[in-house]
Length: 149
Image (cartoon, rainbow, N blue to C red; front, side, top):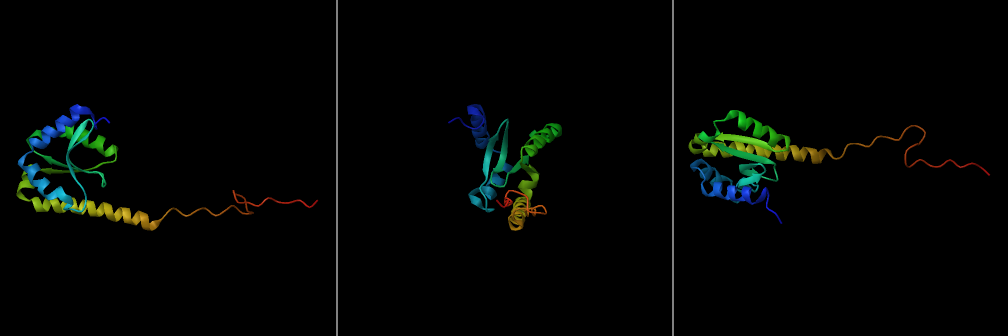
């Protein structure tokens, strides 16, 4: 079975995991082992990109941005493509992660909780109500009119 994005994407993701920044390492310590109640993966290929941290079940991507992310236009285009593909994006500056890791984790947890509440509301509402049959019966369950013989 081929790997997501091919062997080039996989080797790039592995290299990024090995060469993680201090901020990525600090954030990973708070995301790993389902500490926020969901499973995160790090340096996860979503071709043609590799996302820093991904929670597949919540369709959430968390990015740790440092000096390499000074290209705002490229990040906006990337974020738009991933958002269009159904992902939600959270971005944090490396210095925010290093100086306020608990606050960053709190924002991530609140984002996950908001998603959970939205999903619960959808399930509680149930399926949309069915339309009543048209006057005079009609519809798929309409009885056949019988003619006397």
